[in-house]
Image 1 (cartoon, rainbow, N blue to C red):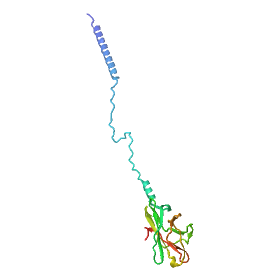
Image 2 (image 1 turned 90 degrees about the vertical axis):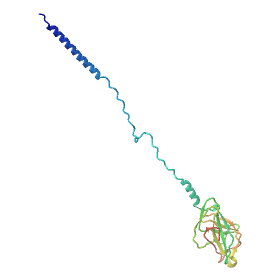
Image 3 (image 1 turned 30 degrees about the vertical axis):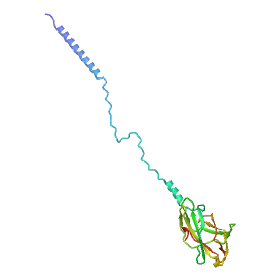
Image 4 (image 1 turned 180 degrees about the vertical axis):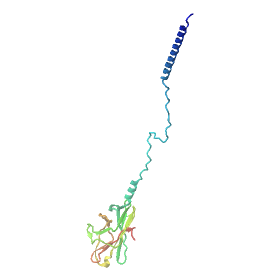
Length: 218
């Protein structure tokens, strides 16, 4: 009787070997699949926050333009200064006689292009043709001096008075001019004197002057 067990065993071994090879192949295929590169993930996009800084410089807040103080200061300087001698014209007005007195207005007029002020008493002195003073300085009459503002072309006046020499008996002289000095100034204005003799000595020789006030006289 023939022995059939060997071929069967060989067949079984071959089948087992084939199965083992299949298993190994399957493992190799799975390994190669696992090492394949994964698809790259698309980058995330974000919507910018409207409140976030964008990097652009924020324009500074508008700054108010400075007020034009230079013009105000200039205007103030032109309207708040003492009248200088060179800005004034002096005149002696018409005589106003009364009760043995001779009264004259001394008028100062602003000839400049700015507004200025005068305050107090003007200086006054009678002089001869050579400039020598005749008689003493006038006496200031009691009053309450105030500041007078003179716009261009405007005037202030002070009264000059003395007793009539024909009545007083004072020694007299006939001046060539009256020197008028504006308040707080040193340079006088020479005004021709055409009103005759004035007292220059004796008990009744006093000449009086009043403080300046607006206008050109009574």
